[in-house]
Length: 305
Image (cartoon, rainbow, N blue to C red; front, side, top):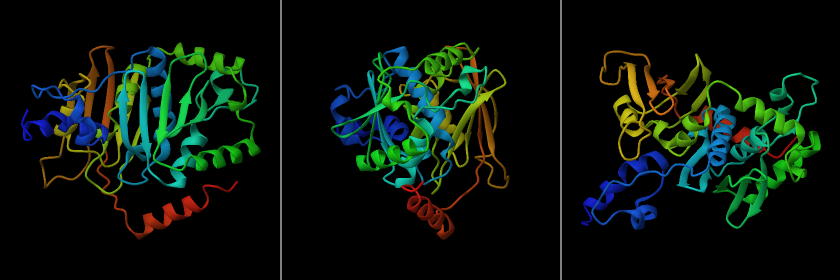
């Protein structure tokens, strides 16, 4: 395979995951076939990835990296996530994901646990491993000082006991997980593969944010400054690295330099019949001095109660 062909074989995967060609070169077929992105092998892995995605995506615009994710490394039995090396990002991920009992007396089991039910963590060589006891699901967080994660969890534990100290699922966690699994639309087949391609939702601007939630029997996916629509359709569509999502309807202004406003694409996942209603707000946010001050303040407060 020629040097000219080799980068082309990894181009769309690199765009979707943030991996480098050097990372992927050994995986490329000698014939130069375009390199795909593996799906989660186990349902429990897909469930964990979807829950982590939905928990972390409210972070907003931190930098060019959606959800604060610089790179993902998708493998069948593991998802590696390299986070932005900023204390605020680590504080946010721990605070939004680690489960705590809310003890609000609600009859709805989903409200009796905050964070991701059943989620536990352990420090491993190279990063922080997120897992669920009794399942093969694993996510490895890297790219930052692991001591930051430990400092944040100590702060959180001081305010409200974390379920981290329970070696197995609590009864409330099992009830919350079962209740969530009874929802008509399962987020795992949609958001696990999307998390494995999260960089596809980032546009060329300086500040990107990606968010998602349940909507109209499907899901809403929103980018504040996403990529051009043709690029997103290619990356999430039927290509070797795509999700197989089909386009049902579009309202696109990407090629109209005289028209202002955002874009929208209604995707349909043929595997599940689920619709994903995507909008790109095209906010045009910049990493200006005001944004830098905001992030500096957030980082200073990351290790305080």
